[in-house]
Figure 1 (cartoon, rainbow over the protein chains, first blue to last red):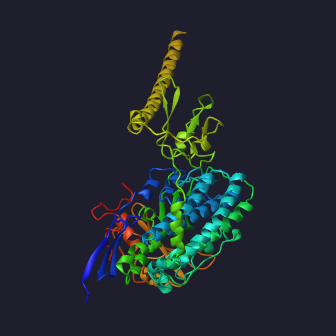
Figure 2: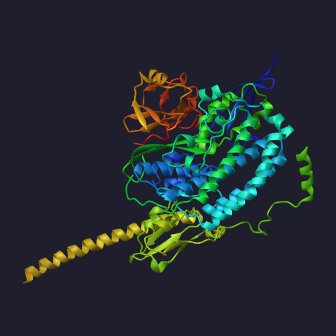
Figure 3: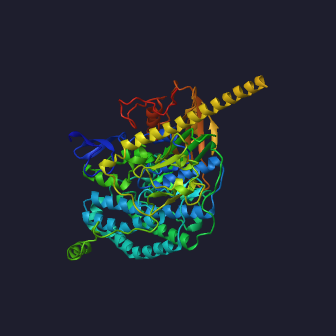
Length: 362
Length: 152
Length: 113
């Protein structure tokens, strides 16, 4: 008969990157149940977008909801505003948006992998992954002009063009990165001490994934083949540039690591296809209309499915904007996945689920 | 085991850190920097002020009708919307130099809030004054017309 | 996007008839404040290509209590907790204090008179 404890992993914790709060009820180190809440970083962005900012300025506001998936938010908002204005963007703008989304995916997955390594106790691997990630930040600065806030997707198209020498620089740096990626795959797969902390920990089965409506790499590692790039083709041509769905069956932390590494290979191939086949056209579609009606858009951010709903009323200011972040869908599954695990593996599980609280409690 | 020996080997290599600011980091030549203004080409339509998302550009007006341009580099987000909305090519342009840090003496936050309110108020005062002069001129004309008619 | 109208009485049975865990995916709940009335929306999508978004909506009086769909859809408690905090509406079996602090004045997204 064990003793029952209630342990909080609070908003400030030495291994938490994001301000979540969990309260675990444990019996002698095994977790029985969890309580969660997320009220630490609410900033009122939906209210500001419907009262203070005009609809063309909202794409810059919404890009600042999250620092890691900034391009996904501004692209999704631009797409929903274009649906409300009933305009089509030129072909070159579509391919440039996809290029920056895939570069963003590479840097975000490498960041998540490095945090899983750090929380499992392997600091040298954390430093090595961060060192290998630096080239992607420099490439994003070359394409968009800035490292973290891109301000790249605007209503009607994109704001900057891709110069041919920057395209060649991207291809050269990706070729340098491939042997480094092979080295990382080797370590994450075969290192024995890392597997003790990662294999069989934080398991999510496929039935639970379907029942709890999880999204992103969290779901794909459990065997559920769900990816917005596979389901919608009307706004961005993913299948044309070589997208492939990757799934795994084990559902534990190790499977999620390997899945993220394999997704980086797919992203590199998509980027090479886009640069070699970029069409020539204008960059922006001009219009003087006002948004009217209602529309929805779904997009695949690095962490899962992002959903936007907007309603306009023929003025410069929108009537309602609703943002659903991928972590919002995963919170319910997160609270259930902890049961049965030991309290010491909680940091590694939280890092592998890749939370982004700025998106969740905007 | 391989990783252990590699980690030991790293002791002999030099670190990867860039010793900023003594060594410079990678900077592209179309980095999004400060906004420049060419006064002789401006037509004072104020479209840049309406397009700016955080409100970093404001125009004030003195009593003769001459407008003046004010820009705050700490509020600006360097997105380039003002450059795209300007109808005259070359009046507003984006350079590639990063913004320098602000000193305490510049009073860049509270001083800007006061300047913003004063600039909007000065424009409204000029518009009200113009309306008053137009109404006075119109009633003065009507009075002169009626005097002429009575006189002749 | 396909929009299907429903009412408070028929909500649980409509969603229980429609939702199948291996075919459909519950995304989020939303509420639009239209002054006197409020439109509450439930969004679903499906797992095959070409995917279609289905939206169940109900026009209600803001003071009425909406039934909860937690027994049908297991992960809906997160979306319901968010709407109770931000829009100050009543949902069965849901308390405040998930997205906003418990002692914060609730309903910041409602239209101010």
